[in-house]
Picture 1 (cartoon, helix red, strand yellow):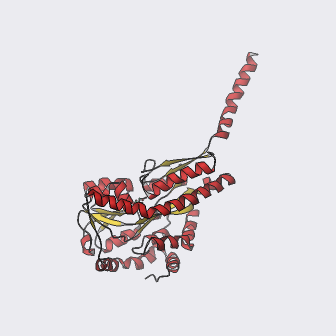
Picture 2 (cartoon, rainbow, N blue to C red):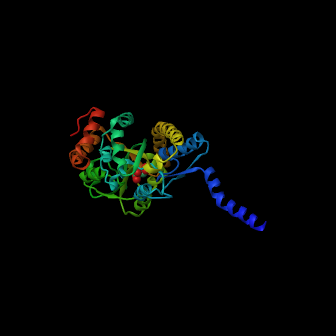
Picture 3 (cartoon, protein in one colour):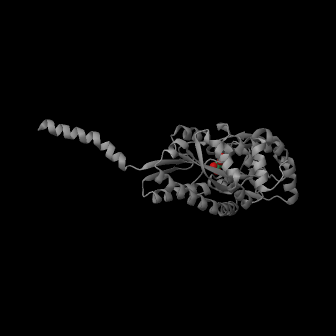
Length: 333
Ligand code: LMR
């Protein structure tokens, strides 16, 4: 009898993990570097809400904001290794993967307004770029908008000559590196989580980013002057580990695709207002002075940065430039 009881107990122990496993949800770790209270932060939380709802709790999404799990470069490595399943890095951060074509999106004054940007990404360019990631074990699911970059330092930046000799933090794109060099400044790649301290201690003199990031990372508190230049665009690619994604049960994947489509629509619909509200709040704080470019200033910046386009051909290749030019119905030179 005792033997029988022991055998039953042992069988229960062996079987228990399997039955627990059958019920335990599929976990998606979604890591990103910005605050929850930003377009991307809100988008990630919306995806979590919808993914868990549409799959009836069969999927659990754990969102890790503010570089709490990984910093910029590490997060892409972690995705390839499968330590995290979903990310939404800015498209400026794919160069370490050997995928440089995304940097074409960082060209200065490429998109004339938000609408032009979003129409361009709905076309062939967005899909073509995602194909470049497949060989790296990464699948692109969606593009999330943030908005246009402003630029800041402890001096006002309205003329190209104002940049002379200043060190600027950039997020990774060589195209941004190029346009900052063309105005005589010294760009430096640095992880997003390190920017506030670098600005505060003077490791760098300035940076570029959107209003929502300036506000939520408090960059505006350590920069005396911000120019609302809107000289380049910041967008994200929501990406997953391909092996994880293709290994999901098809019905679950379909629900997750629906959750992503809805979360994308939501994120892209709030981005503009999030940045407008953030800019108003920065202004209200009185901690920094906002500057705006006159038409003549803008023209001077555009002329000074124009050689970036020619330079970019050697960096990103002609094919992506042609695709963008066709999509935007402009001539790239
Ligand atoms: C940056 O590093 O400046 C941006 O990529 C941060 C972000 O994700 O918005």
